[in-house]
Amino acid sequence: MSGDLEFLYKTGFDQQSANDRGDGFEPLPPGWYRVQVRSGEICSTRAGDGKYIKLRLDIEGPSHAGRVVFTNINVVNSSATAQEIGQAQFARLLTSAGLESPKDLSLLVGKSVEAKLTIRPAKDGYEASNDVQSFRRASAGPVNVNGATGASAGFGSEDEFGGNKAPF
Image (cartoon, rainbow, N blue to C red; front, side, top):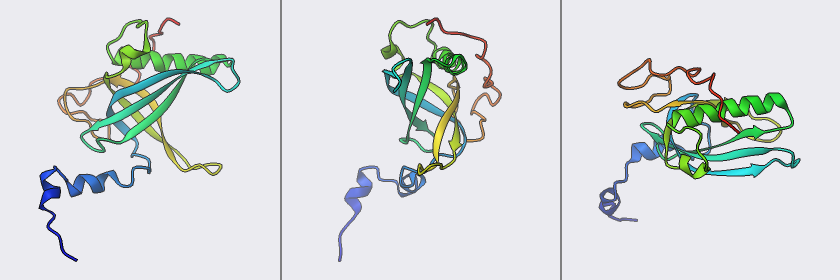
């Protein structure tokens, strides 16, 4: 078996980056990641008595660039506590993205923010996965998984926007 692989390296193939991505299904390490909102959709809950926002977040890097995280944010729910938590999280996302009372979810698409990821342990036949715990403004510098950001390591605490409520 022989074959010149030079063509592969001309495409920008980077073995280390590919290895860093793994198989794409294991959870990312907990921490803050710069993400871009790639898509969003307003959905009805299974019971039909609430609404949630389903988001696709693409990791921008510097580590794990290209990985994708999905999250659902409850914004209308029969449980007042679930609704309050969801609306607070959505308010932090909007504020972090620099949006004030947007009228359409499409305005969020393409915006970059930082998302704090945690790991949900494997349970009931489901493998471990990432959950999005919070959002904050994207910093100017690179982000590492320990939460420090490039140019401004102390910028933005996870509670920075906790008091803001988005109008619904």
